[in-house]
Image: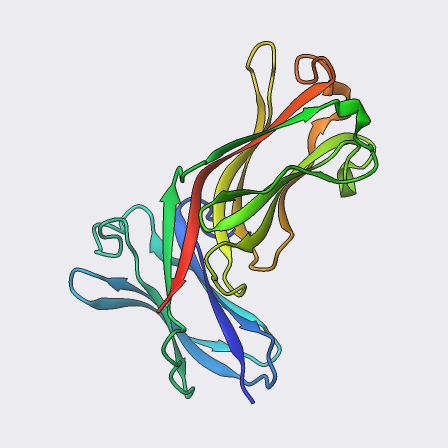
Length: 252
């Protein structure tokens, strides 16, 4: 009987302190026996081998996660030795729990402007796409994962019948990374202006789960009233994604 746990790093923090701090979250994953735990989250000062700690935090049986939203600040992370050579080391200590086996430590890297970071889908004969269904681009690879662009011509969820909805869909991994791994990404979804090049775009950042077909995007990306020239020209629409950064996870 045991619990699986997942340590998640949010590079731009939690709601309320977005962009200022790095947050660290510990979550229960598929518990077979839920017990109360005492945990300690930390980030390492790599210059003097000091662990900057959250202090002891109790994870009670009626809760599935604990966090420290202020563990690391963007303002002084280099001064404190927490960010060295564009690398950080985070961890968690679980009191009264058996040490994890080899092969469970994650090496998490973030790549800025990865290879093939711009992808554009040409939707030729746009009027032939069934308006009430979801439609997908061909698969493409960025980082170590396959992706697709998903659109809903007449909207999805809260955008239904009033917006053109656009999403990025995360698919399978290409190098046998276990599907328990999540991908952190910052990207722009866009519809191209074919006349003035004043493209309509919105930024998305966050985690995409390890399972295939997880999506991130906007149900209300573009009002249907704007779905004409200069974006839709000669029954042709261009929808794109530009990755600004993406994470890659390996195990050791």
